[in-house]
Length: 327
Ligand code: NDP
Image 1 (tube, rainbow, N blue to C red):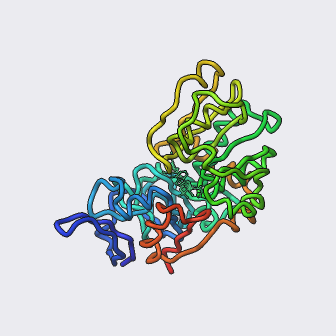
Image 2: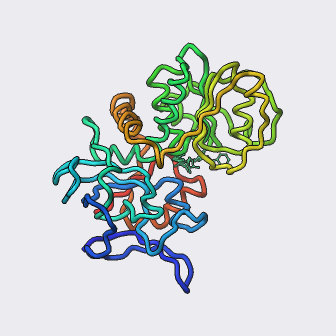
């Protein structure tokens, strides 16, 4: 028997609750994992509250990521006792997920816990932090170096944003953090931001082209913020877009792309190929200051995940929420 946060939709409506499940409730898969930690990402908030149709099969255990220990495996890459991490692949959307004490998944979806990280640290990073690393890798792959100029990080107090600030500053970039919570500016500076700006500077409708301010951008916000970020990117700079916290729309113009040669990278963590994931996780173990990571974490028990879903959508979560599924 194991505890899980189950999403159901029936005549009574859409709901999330903590339930006790048994072996028969585990889905298809060749690896069974004893989960240590999961997290609350923005997408988990959408799933738990039902605000967007993230969950497409009912009943389903929520949770798009987890870290834990293999209990049983018929997959050649994994054996009992291996420490593993999972992000995405539709887990927590169409396949029961990580907000549970046990999970069963396809072995091909798992990544080995990188040396130097505990399962708790892996989930302090979570899908948000792994996505931040995919964004950083896209900017570095574009050729941006610390001397190229400032990097803008939007949604800087959120999960993706705060890990991006910590990573980029450790790599030597000058980071400008955009946030609606300017009262948290000191926290962002402690993470490594050189400058903090009010997100209101970027969130309203803007011009097709603005002053060239950013060598690169990590954007988890979308909408006008993304359009303005592109409009303010320097000649041949790059923008990594991964989120939609302000909106799914992109009310911009082609001007930054055709007049300044700006490149817009789309970042998807869910179906990212295994080699890229392994590279991202190895880089996280190497490039993230673990003391700074720890300063971003609030740990909650499994039952606390129910309320945390609404909290993250309301933009009230600072940094990362780690769920101890065994508490
Ligand atoms: P968080 O809620 O932790 O962070 C989002 C941040 O965006 C908030 O903290 C807030 O930052 C800012 N924000 C919220 N609402 C608005 C608004 N209306 N206007 C401008 N800024 C706003 O979420 P995550 O970091 O977990 O995820 C961020 C985004 O990235 C989400 O849209 C998520 O779906 C997406 N994502 C995408 C992935 C992918 O594979 N492409 C993977 C992971 C996440 P502040 O308070 O500093 O202003």
